[in-house]
Image (cartoon, rainbow, N blue to C red; front, side, top):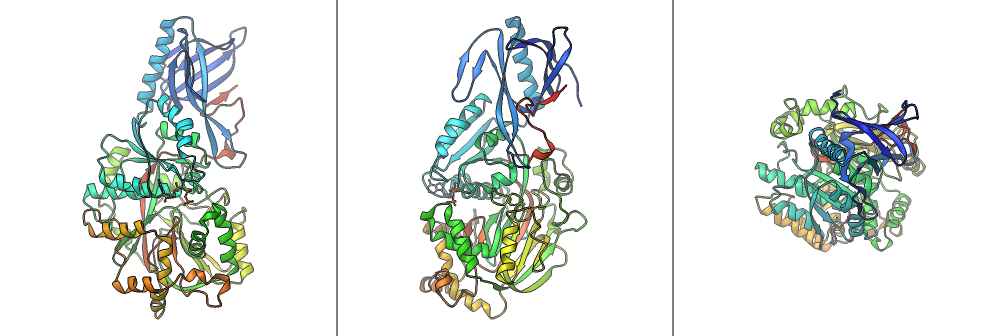
Length: 583
Ligand SMILES: Nc1ncnc2c1ncn2[C@@H]1O[C@H](COP(=O)(O)OP(=O)(O)OP(=O)(O)O)[C@@H](O)[C@H]1O
């Protein structure tokens, strides 16, 4: 640890006297008693200093400056517990320091700002911000302008803000416009909005690299720009699973200090090419049915998920299928090893070294990645066939407030693998037990009808003879896609350069699409349950049932650092961390 002393002086905070010390990485101030002995020290890593201003300055709820020429104000990250064992809330800490002279004040501000540049060099300077004004409770604009923009301004980040006027505007913008000069893209909205940014940035990066996303065997180029998520949706699972809390200020502070969390992404393909990308849940059976059902009850708001979950549970469905998977190396980690992927996760760090062996920093990481592991799809595939309640693939824990440990509690954000969860057909009470365990700390995999495998790729197909039924019933899939989405799938797959999503398949499918009804109308009121379900891909219904999905290790990076272990860190009003208190 570097200890080069840059500045030290006596300062006052209120009426108390302190000795302030700036070393390379750390800014400390120690309270002194009347005999000049140390009482307590507050220590802030320079990397977590948000800004330094001359005078007495307040930022929230609005900027106020009292330009006293012997005072400077330091803003920094301050943590507090959420009350739950994982995840920490970040707020803006602020301390006003008085010094004996203006010259000393100027020295402090100059040195602190220089230290920020040197020891926290990966902060964003310019961001492209998309606000979905209709996400969640429709408060995206307010959240951004009242809570986030003042922090970005304080940190000297310039932003180009676009309030979206239609779905997929952000994705299309990223695919079509020149992004030069932007360090990152921020979405203010929910998981749907994040998915738009994900698709736009991955697509744009592959276009620039001249890679075809439709080709499953191609190793995709990781995106050089970070994604920031300001949660303002009705589902903010990606934010929760990567930060540990759903809080706009916490997320804004992670963006400002340039935190970087790599994230694995699954690409989902059908025979003719790429269908979509997924980071949190690719689920067939129960989770697909719940989504399809919930689409019919959008008017209920977020309650529709609880309602549809109950309805689909009561309808007691299972589906025939063939699942093939390519296991990941069991020596590296296991979905049953009871570890948790937390900030600084060693499994993910080792994966970075494995995935990017020739890089020592993020800059070279991206250039060295291209075409390095064509061997990703090699290995022995395992095949299982039968009837399933659900088949799910997730490349993160997918924890959320309702399921704090998530779909797969030991899944990793960035180890290049996904967890495949197979829930075989079982009696209704058994399935209820499985679902219920997601809301508690009990192991949902410790049930005889549940299997979990850590995988690199998964293929799902229907048993011979079922394909015909699929064509009869896939018409219901259109219920999950609007006109524009269908148009997008068709236009971009034809437009060659973008080749973003796959063609919808043969004309026969479209014909049946027009003539058949929605299988989910069956539900409880119909004696015949549908023979096939649909895929729920991060909250979107996929247009195909037979799919192949592959995990791309660390394809994108978020302005986040993974979940900080609140249980391991003791927070109190006095202990302002990033600040540590030494007595
Ligand atoms: N201006 C807009 N008008 C309509 N839809 C939009 C607009 N901007 C973005 N969208 C779409 O709205 C969808 C939902 O947005 P978002 O995820 O921000 O909110 P949400 O409330 O969490 O979503 P959901 O309704 O899926 O729970 C996204 O898929 C996005 O493509």
